[in-house]
Amino acid sequence: MLLTLAALAVTGAPVVTAAPEGAWYQREAAIMGTRIAVELWAKTPAEGDATIDAVMKEMQRVDMLMSHYKPESQLSRINAHAGAGPVKVDRELFDLIALSLEYSRLTDGAFDITYASVGYLYDYRKHLRPDEAQIEAHLAAVDWRSLELDPAQSTVRFARPGMRIDLGGFAKGYAVDRSIALLVARGIEHASVSAGGDTRILGDRFGRPWIVGIRHPDDPDRVILRIPLEDTALSTSGDYERYFDADGVRYHHIIDPRTGHSASKVRSATIIAATATQTDGLSKTAFVLGPEQALEVIARIPGVDAVFVGPDGKVYYSPGLEPPTPADGRP
Image (cartoon, rainbow, N blue to C red; front, side, top):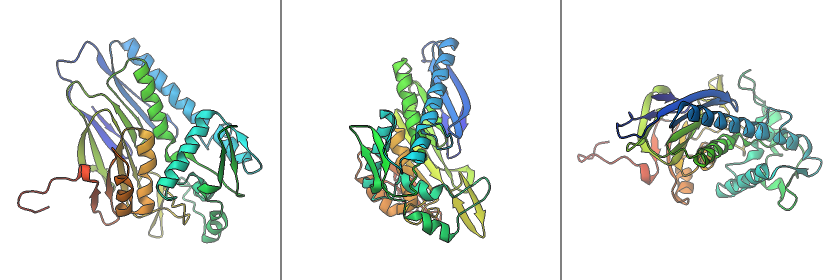
C-alpha cells in the first residue's frame, strides 16, 4: 500500500501473518480543500465502512465550522463581524483560536492567523498577487496581539480595522486529531488518517512500523528520508503545494506575517510530534524563521523533531533525526 500525498508518502509494511482476524480498509475523499485519506484495520467490512464514514463526517463537520471559503461557517462570521464588535462562537472554535495565540507567542509571531488580512489578496488558482501598495495598506491589520478573546463569553473581536483570520495553518491537523480520537473511541487500534500533508498514525502494522518518506521539494519521486513511525503525527509543508511562478519568483500559500510576501527561508518543513494540530502549526514557522532559528524553537518543545530543506537544497535535522555520520567521516 502506498499513499502518495501532496507533501509526503506513507508506506505501510506488509501485514504479518500474526495479525488478528480482519482486514485493512481504506478510502479517499476531497474535503477541506485537500485530499483526505483513511486506512484502518477492522474486524468486518461493515465495521470498516461505518468507521471510515464517521471519520469523513467528522472532517466535514470541522470544515463547516472553520472554513473561510464557506460564508456560513463560524470563521467566516468572525471575519465579517468581529471588526464591529465581539462575535460569540462555539467553544471548540474559540479554544483553537486561543491555541493559535500560544503558537504566536512561542514563535515570536512567525505563526500568526491574522496573516489572512494580507493573505486573502492572493489567488493561486488565477495566478493573482497583490502589489506592494496593496500589501502595505493591509499589513497594518496583521497582528495577533490585536485579536481579543473573552473566555467567559466565548467571543472574538478584532481590535484593528481590516483584520481577518485563517485557521488553514492548523485546522487540517486539528481535524486529523479529532478523527483519531473518534477511531480510539470506536476501539480502532491501527490506522492512518491524512489531510493533505498532515498525518497521524494510530498504533503500528502488527509488529512493524509505518514507514514515512519525506519527498524532495523539486522531485516527488525522490525521498530525502524514510522514518519508521507509530502512534505519532507528522506534517510536511512545502512551497510546491499551492503556488504559481511569475517573473522568476515563486508565490506560495505560506505568507510571512511580517512582510505579507510568501516566506522563502526554507523550501520544505516536516515536523514530527504527538498531535497533528501541533505538527501542522509548527511546520509553517520554519518558512518565516529559517532553519536554524526554527530548530532553536523546536529544541524548546519536548518530543518534537524536524527536517527542513533550505533554498539551496541543504537538509537540516533536529538532533533526534540527524543521520549517523559514516565511519570514514564522509557525508
